Image (cartoon, rainbow, N blue to C red):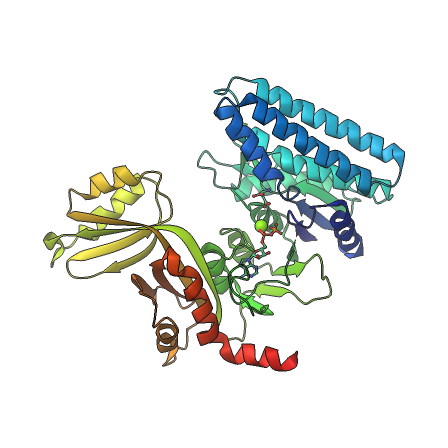
Length: 448
Ligand code: ADP
Ligand code: ASP
Ligand code: MG
């Protein structure tokens, strides 16, 4: 079996859904199709929830009815027959009535995750109905029946496997299963989700659970690029990349993949293929365990970073100091991204300021604490296992005009991380594009 995941833009309009359906029906293998919400829907559902939280009832109702209108016009364009248009509009009315009912609940009883789940429920039902209209047999399976997370919201891989396999086996003759990305259930029955962009993670978790031969992530670009195409011109698509490098890029800001999405695929050695729904003939990017490529592969950037520096002369020659510092972060459930140390100070970065005040006050018992906000980690990913001379020189040369706050190299063979001011991010990404990939760029220009 294979898993095919389609993102928000891919199911973003009637025209695009038709392209998605072509890809599904042209894929001969038995498959699980994972769908995101129609692009923009999750954002609108978040706005609806925020409006209710702020007692702006009229605003929430207006947003809901505008969203409904957009779905009614989508089904008008998508379906060929009045019979199916009618079926789809009955479904849309039912789901939007449910949403309006939810909004009438007292703000303290209103559940954000129940509202957010509607996006994927809408898209999967509409695509399933469209396939039915085209006489393609499919089975819609609810992610809420098998995507289980613990109280910490971490997916329970074993439970997911135990839940989904019987569903698939009971429908042994079915060739196409359709399900929702992103949404899941806690073991206490509450609806939850895998955080923004989480449909990629769903696809990888399902792939691992069913022992898929391949996980395909269909999006709006020809695979993983060597740099962030939202900020840098002349980026190019990478044909092959290892799990380790791609995981670093996803974690450090390459939006094409959810940060955790490669873990289940890597652990189960299932190749992940990134493909473009709007250019299916383009090769895309294959992510697998080993690649022949050495040296620089790509650059990504992650915003919203805070750095904490703890300075203490007690650290000098003392053991156990770092342990105490790490315990503060562990206690406050905040993970650390980058670390650098000197004899008398340690600097650490975090990407989540939820517990920052508590962390600062607890760290103050060990030394003087300085905090800087609004920084960006720039991640240079590649295979640096050969430890070739000149690697870091190239990076620092490229960034010679940009002040670098922190550097991390050698933690893994696949990543050089640099901390810069957020205002220097785009300049840094562009400079690295010129400095590290110049030859490839010249080659690309010559072939145009
Ligand atoms: P989907 O809705 O299909 O999940 P996303 O918007 O989440 O799509 O991810 C695709 C987008 O990721 C691209 O359109 C591109 O702008 C952005 N992106 C950021 N970094 C990269 C990168 N290194 N390679 C490819 N795309 C990237
Ligand atoms: N619909 C969700 C989001 O917009 C999940 C996803 O698209 O992967 O974040
Ligand atoms: Mg995405």
